[in-house]
Image: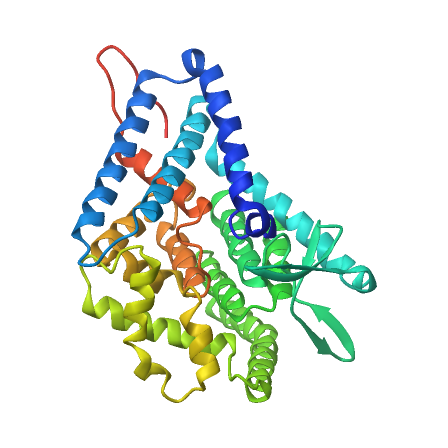
Length: 395
């Protein structure tokens, strides 16, 4: 669950190594008494299958490739798979664990939002190669802000490097509180926190969930119409203010660089590269990615050289298009099928998957640990093995 957090941005490799060591120690300690043979065989099979797929893809790409990137991705997968195996061996409900983690994130975000009105003078800058933010005691983080009625509001980002990531987890919390565990209190909390992120993507996903929830209950057409009108009236000012702010930022920016322009470019560039290499993508080599991207320079003909330089040195903010350009359509289709088969949401899986897809259109997270963990849960639901005389483990 460190996906997208400031801590992962600052100390990601160290945290990963330490957590891996702790997980391996726990796994070896409980090996004989916790994990059934069926469970261990399943873990071995999915690890081998995923490794084989990466191996084939590495050699199928028509460019020089980066073996280190594939090894890192595979290590991430087998470590996260080991964690999921531990959950199954301990009979820990993945959905309940996720819900508890999301509740903690929500409580932290509420406290951070309240404190933002009082601790502005005490904020210190956190600046690294991949992060530029402000913090209070390295427990609460703030970045972008806006003024409304003479009051400065910091966009709520919780533990994460930007508000757009907080909205992903709060939308998942809203989904689980609405369709999995039916918790009205956390429905309200999650909806409120999504509004405080000031994220148009997050609010759009929230409205979609409201509509699905609305048409899932028995109400008259008039009642549904009134609720829909209310939602539009509440959300419309946020969309307008957000759009106005981005337009003003774009018109005042000397380098013409705004997040909205970059996202449009990332999408167009992804479609362009995927159309040229639909089956395998271009692989995980950063040098190949830059070389292929430079051939898309016509997409930047209307912008300054400063903008082009920034684009050349950055990773795509659109996870879906980034994923497609690197791995091709078949691999990505299989990945999202496994996300659909995850074990958190057995009802309205399509909506859960849609939340993930829409969110990752503007955030580079699709290969991060949380989503890999969901993929692992999908694989475990497909690969289940039963030896003679034994019982299969529960999903």
